[in-house]
Length: 302
Image 1 (cartoon, helix red, strand yellow):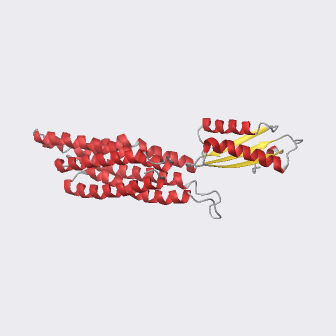
Image 2: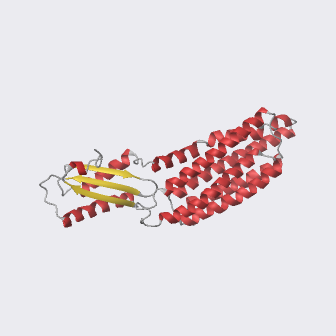
Image 3: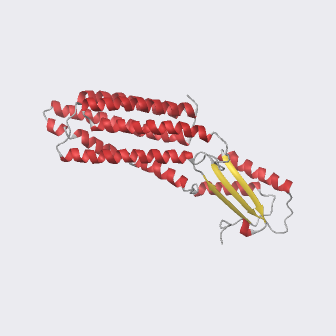
C-alpha cells in the first residue's frame, strides 16, 4: 500500500470495524475502558471518512470559489479530529471519576482481556501498514492516532490481566476499581496527542508562519536566486497549512534598476525553482517593485 488514499481508506475501514466490535464488547463485558476505546475508534472512523474527502479536494487546483485552493482543509480536519477526541476524553474522564467515587465497576475481565489483545494487535498492524504508505500530514496524523490507540489497547490489556489476577486472589472489590482507573489513566496519558493535533491545526488555520528556521531557509534560497539583481530590501512571508507551502516574496529594488518584463520573469522562475526544489509542493508569488510601501508587510494599511 503506497498511496495516500489507500492508507486513509485502510484507516477508515479499520476504525469502523474496531468501533463496531468494541461497542459490542463493551455491552457484553460492562467495561468503560472498552467503551472508551470503541468511542475513540468511532471518532477515527468519522474523521477518516472526512479525511478521504479532504484528500480528494487537495488534489484540485484553485478555482473561483476557492481562489487560494483547498490548502486549509487539511489543518481543518486535523483540528476537528483533535477536538472530537478531546470531547470523548472529557466525557470518559468524568464517567470514570463517578465510577471510582461509587465503588468501582464490575467487569467480565476474561472476555475483556481477549478484546484488548485483539485490539492491540489490530492497531499495531494498522500503524505498520500506514508507515509504509506515502507520507503526508493526513497520513502522519493517522499514524499518531493509531499509535496512541495501540498503546491504549495494550495498557488496557495489562489492566484487565491485573484485574483478573485480583479476582482469582480473592480481591474482587479491588478489581472493580481497575476499569475506571484505567479509563482515567488512559485519558490523562494520551491527552497530549489530541491537544497537539488540535493546537497545530488551529495555528495553521490562523495562518501562522512555519518555524523560524524554515522561513530563514526560504529567504536564503530566494536571495541566492536573486543574486544577479540589486536588492534594497526583501520580504519573504510564508504559511504552511498542510503539505503545501504558500510563499509571498516582495523584492524592493533601487528606483534606477533596469528590469524589463522578460528579465523579471527569468528571476521569478529562478525563485520558484529554488523554493520548490526544497519545499514542494509550494505556491509562490514574486513581486518586484521600487516603492517600499508596495512591498512592506503593512502594505494596504494606512
